[in-house]
Image (cartoon, rainbow, N blue to C red; front, side, top):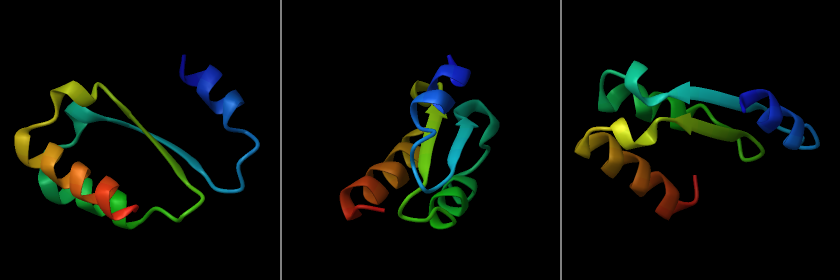
Length: 67
């Protein structure tokens, strides 16, 4: 599936990043990933349902701000 996603997004001018939610151990790690993205980048979060409540809140804040 990931290879298919790379193919679908090969037309974008930014980068395509894949992270696995279980591998992020703290809210700070998620914030670090989000703040290092550029506007043209695409972030795919695998197993997002495994995020803790604080990680979910951080992600929601970023989405609401349009990061």
